[in-house]
Image 1 (spheres, rainbow, N blue to C red):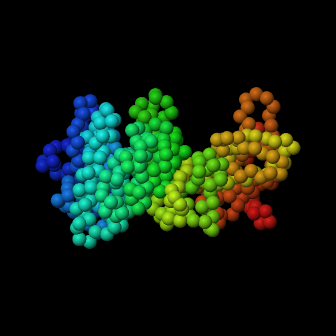
Image 2: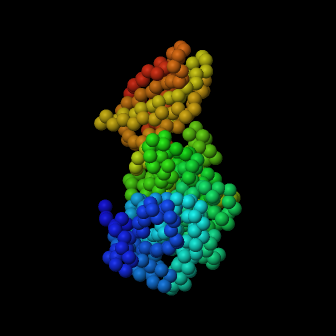
Image 3: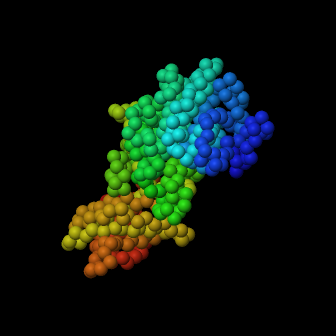
Length: 448
């Protein structure tokens, strides 16, 4: 990876070979800092060394190319965001553009959140002046301004004149802040009218993030609540407070740098998604499913057909990058005389011995005689050719009788690759809490 000058020792701007993001101390957070906004430009020509620019000095900025602004949020300790270098590098890797880091650390650094929030309108004013001059420059096209709002609900384009609003093609907000912005009217927070296409990733809606939809499409990874791999208790230290909040940034980064693509599913609720009710976008007859991150705007033509053009989309992720999950349906047809309720754990293994597991236990499934239940299974690996499948049935009861689940047919079908052969097993009895392993066969074409 390229070494960028984000964490260099900070000297006075005039002394710096490569201007760096402002690094402040915890002492600065205690006493507070006055606002000073610094715009740092990166291009493929100066990929590792920023240029400080302003409304009268554009430096290497090429106004005929797309421009992406990266705006950070509240900084309670004064340290630079650890992800900014990766975000700049990733954006310039996928497209030859201008990337402008909006460094307002002098202003965002404070222990008093309200002090930082109050300065967001002033940051927007600086951006307004800069964008105004960009648009006055010869050759500027309307689809070449893109603003990425990172962890900040308050710095939105409502503070820009209406003549500019229509020229901002895309605005991405990564877990916009909830405190002081929840319940605010549209003019005081992020809103779909802020750009031609607004997409939002909500990863911490029960703490630091904003709960309600704010854009044309709002993504809720893992329901927007606790993110896998993040500490569950305060014993996790600072990560307990910021891991969920920061996950939105790393999910966006994965769309720039990773080999897999995170697919989301338009849905009214996380529960409906987990219950497999929101996967119609994967069929050939429907619009394709929206993609998370940099390529989310590929879905905007579909949104134009909606009234209002707003959608919530849900998906699950793995604990660590590349975060992708691979979705399958497990169709189970049973013939028990009595109704059985419980959870299913399914494990897949390929010829090389690689295994991946999915626990479908978010709520008990109800198995009735001659009634097919379709369960949505999510795996963190995609095994092309499945050699063995194992199933475990559990009612969750520690005491009491051990039940059996009598299966007439089990079918496994891939959502991501519906053209793959569907795998079946017929006449199977699962004993509660006992793993049953078998080799699947191709499903009968008569029953596909």
